[in-house]
Image (cartoon, rainbow, N blue to C red):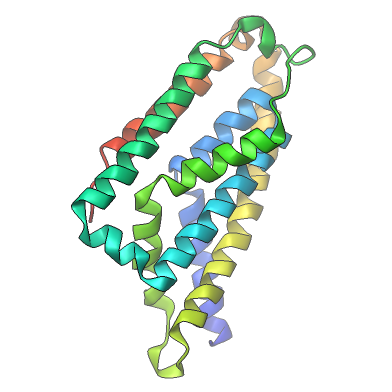
Length: 208
């Protein structure tokens, strides 16, 4: 592939990753609630989920989901249900567990798994790669699957970098929020609201 094409794809990928969407909102919610380490662990899970979607787009599995209304609906509602369940958990967190010095950190492995599930159970991500990657592939150069995998790797690397920076920024905002006791007592409501919003967004998503 031409280096100019790769750089063009990189620029588009960064803009798309920064756009408000389920993944970045999920990272922000975890970082605000538990700090940057939680956000980074979640980011690693999300990017692992991206591997599944990139492979699906390359192998043509995404096309099957696109063509099957039932497959799309099953994955979509499973993802929405999982996010609403996380929202319910967040709403029922104890206020005392949210203070900066007293909070019990969830296991990073658990957050990593949540990131994977949240991403894999969002069929819009598969369709996103199915629509995006071919636009930057040059069929005349041959090895189309390898080109798509290369572009997928570029997207994955920049997504992890962007999510990490977002986690760091969200933690700074977290410190400011927790300096106000009234706000600190309600951070779990903010996290729950973000999870619920993501779940509803996925539930009402439609095939393009």
